[in-house]
Image 1 (cartoon, rainbow, N blue to C red):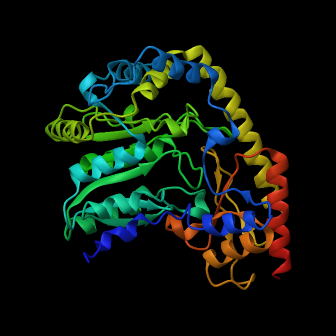
Image 2 (image 1 turned 90 degrees about the vertical axis):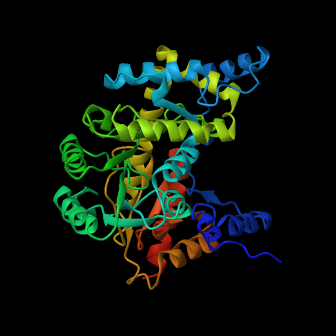
Amino acid sequence: MAELSARSRYAVNPLEEDDAIAEKLEKSGKSVIKLNRGDPAVYFPTPRYIEEAYIDAIKENKTHYTETRGAKELIEAVMGRYRRLYGLDLEEKDVIVTQGVSEALYMINSALVDNGDRVVVFKPYYTQYIPYIRLAGGEEYLLDYRENDGWRIDVDELDRHVRKLKHKKRIQYILLTNPNNPTGTVLDRKTLSGIVGLANEHDLILVSDEIYDEIVYNGAKFTSISQLAKGIPYVILNGASKNFDATGFRIGFAIVPGNDKTSQALKTKLADFASVRVSANAPAQYAIAEGMNNTVEHNRAIHGMVREIEDRVNFAVRMLDENKYLSTVRPKGAYYIFPKVDLKHLRFKRDKEFVDTLLKTRYVQLTRGSGFGTPGHIRIVALPRKEVLEEAINKLNEFCRSRR
């Protein structure tokens, strides 16, 4: 019998690892509150005008393969969106439509990373980043967000590590997530400018995952890397899942705006990968093109959703602040809360033990922080209605009190 590659172990997803426990509890008659998945379409229905555009695409027989790079209509819509929001002028060849940001990550790493190459990643990080780096034969080089400073990046520390690492290993790119999953941090313009300057000095590529770029609140202002990274190779990852509330459509895109030699080679390689997989979901591409072009309907939908998310996040944080065993930084983007847990005083050795025990005894499903590279934390998805959040956090707080 053939042996499976050791790389298969990278496919474990911390967001799903307790699903079997939750399913068993539900089959036994328990009601489980699930705060482990960041799927907005479960709580905020996909805007009707996007659904109707999807139906229209099917009725118009737009169910065949599109161009491998993506339907022209969607590529032009992406170009229009970035011109409106960030003043970025793109050409069609700068955009590759993918099956969600997940496929974009796979393509980027396959194109840029060889065996032994390093990728600078800040932790906590989104769970899928590391498997894709390792599947390409690369290694992550992990640096910390500074939790005590509101989950900020220390640019001077990044510079020291890059200088040190360049003597030993080839660094292929620096990966940013802005706004951040799982912390909800929105990087300020000064920090981003410093990172751009550092990348320029050390001739490094920047890859910026900006999938939550319109879900920003609590006074924060979002700055796209495209507004700062002039003249250096960089990639923007984005898609329909979050801003357009259409997770199941599986539409993402990678943008490579530069005309330098590295950017040109990367565009060619991404186009090659796109041709191998043929095309992304065709009706969904036309629907999301309508989602981007119909700015009146989109603004109405996104502003209403963000106001409600802000209200739910802040409500949950106020409740969590009552728990002396949790330490929480108030988010400013996305819809996650990432408290630090005083495991020692609650008599737990690991965050997974905490999460599993909470699920089995209080029927609340969260995600362990170690799955995001930061042990001793938990991730809470603050998307459900406030009465659901209130019930869940009351159970969480009572669970902690019972462990004193």
